Amino acid sequence: MERGSSKHGPRVDEQMSREVEGLLQGPGAGGSRVDESRQPEPAGEDQPEPKTLTAGASRGGNPQGMSMDDVEGRSRLGRYITMSALPGDREALIANARDNDAPADIVEALERLPDGTRYQTVSEVWAALGHKNETTRW
Image (cartoon, rainbow, N blue to C red; front, top):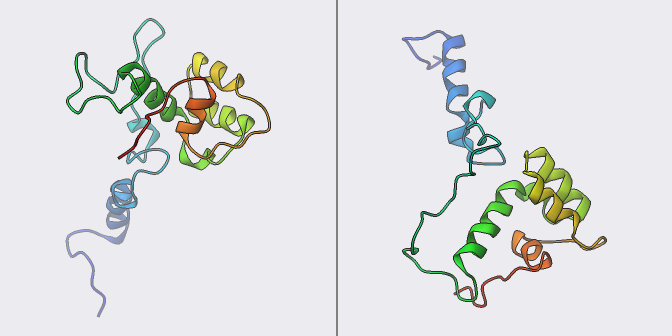
């Protein structure tokens, strides 16, 4: 005896399972939004980019050795470099950022990276661009 839904046909069951596929498989490169139509639209040219942190003091404080601007900048850089690009060299990071529709200033910053170096993490890329990382992690 085969178990299945008694309320839907196999085609509807298959369609319903695809609708929640992103939630079941985890975030990955595209987040949990499977369909492109469900991706949030980027800010317009004359609109500011949304920040990950609210204005004012952070509840948890800054990591030791970093300002809130450093935290926000590194987070912004990390939004356009996916885990599939790491470890990677300058060319791989630039290509990945362009694939993720990175703004021009992010791509220009990545183009300033030295050639021939492989980066393991976004923090290494951030440091290579001349910024500060936290001095202690735990």
